[in-house]
Amino acid sequence: MAVTALGGAAFAQATAPAAPPPVSDIVRKQAERSKQDVNLRGHPVPPIATPRDKLPMDRIKVPEGFKVEVFATGLAGARMMLLSPKGTLFVSTRTLGRVYAVADPFGKKEVKTIAQGLTQPNGLAMKDGSLFVAANKQVLRFDDIDATLDAPKSVDLSEKFNLPGDLSHGWRYTEFGPDGKLYIPVGANCNICEINPGTHAHIRRYDADGSNMEIVARGVRNTVGFDWHPVTKELWFTDNGRDWAGNEGPEDELNRLPKDKVGANFGFPYCHANKVADPDVVRPDPCAGVILPKALMGPHAAALSIKWYTGDMFPAKYKNVAFIARHGSWNREKKIGYDVVMATEKNGKVKVEPFLTGLLDEKTNSFHGRPVHILQLKDGSLLVSDENNGAIYRITYDGKARTARL
Amino acid sequence: MNLKLLSTLAPPALALAAFLCAPAMAASLAERVETCGACHGEDGNARMPRLPSLAGQPNFYLMNQLILIREGVRKIPEMEALAKELKDEDILELAAHYAAAPSKRSEETPDPALAARGAQLAASHHCASCHTPALTGQEQMPRLAGQRIDYMVESLKAMRDNRRTSADPLMVETVVGLSDHDLAALAHFAASK
Image (tube, rainbow over all chains, first blue to last red):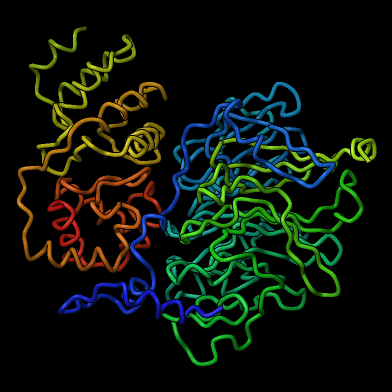
C-alpha cells in the first residue's frame, strides 16, 4: 500500500493559491492528497429510530444455517450493549447523548431512557450491580441500577478518572477486564498530529474507583472495541486508521497485546498498519519498536467491536473465532465495511472473512445500516447493534434446519 | 392565552410567555414559527446579531439540532424551555418548514480580503466535502452560504475551543489550531457565497 503515491496523483487536482497562506504543513498536504469530494463526508446518525417494518432485514446475508432477526427497536443511535446479570439490557449512544435500558429484554422489551444530555456516552461497564457510563471526560456510576431504572441516581467519578475532554475521538469503549480493572481508551485528539503520549492515544486501566491508573497500550489512535482471548487471556483490540491520506488507507488494525508487553507501542502517529510511515508526522525509523497488527481490517472500514466466540450454539469451527463489527467508511470514495467479519487465528496467522453482509449496496455506493457492537448471549446467539437504524439484531444458528435442508 | 396577543411584546418576553403557557396548549406550526421568528426572523432569516438563520438549512440538520437542543446535548439556555416541550413530530414539522423557506443574506457585509483568505482556507480544510461546493449544506451539515457572519464566528470559536460539546468531532478536528483571524476569514468567505 503506497500512501505517498496516491498523494502524488491527488496533488495535481489541488488548486495552489498564488500566495500560499501560512497553513500548517499537515493540513496543506492533506488537502493536496484528497479531493473536495462530497462523497468524503461524515455520515449522520439519525436521532429518530427506524420503524420495525422499515428495517433492512431482507438485505442482510449470513452463512447458511444462521438466521438474523430483529431483537429490539426504538433505540435511536444504539451503540454499546451490556446485559446485566439481573437481566436488563443497557444500550449506549454517542452523538445523541442518551443511555437506554431495555427492561425484560427477552419478554416485554420496555425501553427506558435512563440518562440524557451526556457528551458521547459510548462506554458501558458493570461491576457488582453498578453500571459505569463513560461519557467523554465523565465517568458516572449508577449503583443498584436494575432496581432503579425509573429513578436512576449516579455518583460522579470524573475527578478520580481525570479523562481528557477533547471531542475528537472523545468517545470511550469500556470493559472490566479479567483482572477486575476498568479498561478505558483515550484516542488521539486529532486526525493526525503529534500527541502527548502521557494523555492521549493509548488504552488505560483503572481500579473501579478510578485509582491506580496504568497505560497498557500506547500509540493507539482510536480503539472502539476490545476483548480478551478466551484461551490466552491476552487483550485484542481494533484501531481505526487516519483519514485524509487517500482511499487506500492506512488500513484499520486488529492488534494483540502480548501478556509480557504491557505498555507497548502500537505506532501512532508515526507508523500505521503494516509499516506504513505517516506522510505528515515524520520521524526516522518510524516503526522501530512498534508491535505490528495481527491483521489489517480494511481502509477506512471503521472496525469497532471485537468479540471472541465462546458459545455452543454455532458450529464447532466458530469456537474461539473473533467476530468484528465494521461500522463502515466515510473518508473513502468507494464505501467499504458496514458488516460483521470473522477473524480466525491459526498458527499465529489471522484470516479475516465476511460473516454478516448486505447492508452495503456496492452498486449505488450507499448503506442501510452500521454495525457497532457485538454481544454474546448465554445461549450462544449474538446481538449486533445498528447505530444507523437504532435497532439490535439477534443472530442464531439452527443446526437442525440446516441438516433438514441437506 | 393567545400567541397573537403576545406578538406585541418584546421578543425575549414573547419567548418567555410562550414557554410559560406552553404546557397548557398544543401549539400549531404557525404559532411555533411565530415564536421562533421572534429571534430567528419571521421568515427564518435572522436579523439579530449572533443568531443563526434557519431558512434553507438542510431538513436533517434542523431536525437533528432541535433534538440535540431538546435533550440538553447542545446547550443553549435561551432555547431550553422552548425545545423541551417539542415532540419528535413537532420537530419534524418545524424542520420541514424552515428547510423549505428561502435563504436570504443578512445585512452584514463580508470583507473581500477576509473572504479571499477564507476561500484558501476552505480549500485546504475540505469544507466543500461536507458542506458541498456551494456551501449549502447536506444532511447533518449546516448551510453556511448566506449565514450570519457573527454567528459563524462564535460557532467556529466554540468548536475550536472544545466548548460546544454537541459538535461533530470531525468539525472540531477541522478547525483545531486556527487563529481567530482565520476563523473570521472562513465566516466571511462562507457568508459571501
